[in-house]
Image 1 (cartoon, rainbow, N blue to C red):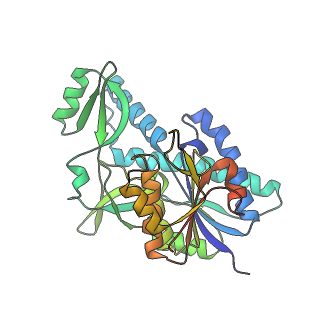
Image 2 (cartoon, rainbow, N blue to C red):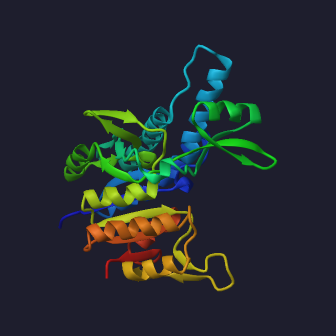
Length: 312
């Protein structure tokens, strides 16, 4: 029997929010991923990096404040750093977990770049908040550099960057080759490093890419059998947090679009996951999407939990 190819998208809950939290969290996450490997899935894994890239950006900015000769790291470099160290922790934890179960399988991280359109509307209205709280003086310095900042009353100012739509995954051929060879691949971490193509050269963009968006694209590019989105809740709900909250065990892409139009899914949390599911299913109508939490994922792939979304 051919193995099922799945793209697994890991949220913040699977990684923690600090370096120490991440060391502990990935050990738990590795058990769930190993369960999927034992269930005969070939995995391509992508992950969030919001807290990690913000931490790196803050550290590099503070380093520049203390040591004037240091050059501040641009967002694309911070994104690359976060991909490297998050991937490092996941691949080592998963490799150890697989070996403890008698499974010898290569797990590797691919530093992944994703092209974006320099004229994407997101560059004109940045929305992604990153980095430390700043004083008004520091915020004015950022504005003079051409960056965007917002004020959070009572707390200070923070930098915001664009979240453009992904166009192409630059390293997709390498990812596909490893996936076809039944290797576990970690790729497109944090949405991938956003780059703009200029005369055959790739130039880093001051932006971040929505990780759910890239998960849907990655699953579509690989023609994966399943897209498994791991988040903080065991299932998708109608009226989430309200008095009429109701779990959705399954729905079609058409139903998902209707619920989006009704405003059922919150922007920045569940909405991008549903949109990623629809985008994937439009490219691979034979596939299916599973949205669930980390601790229910093993049951969810057996139909005992989670929300399944199909094309029809």
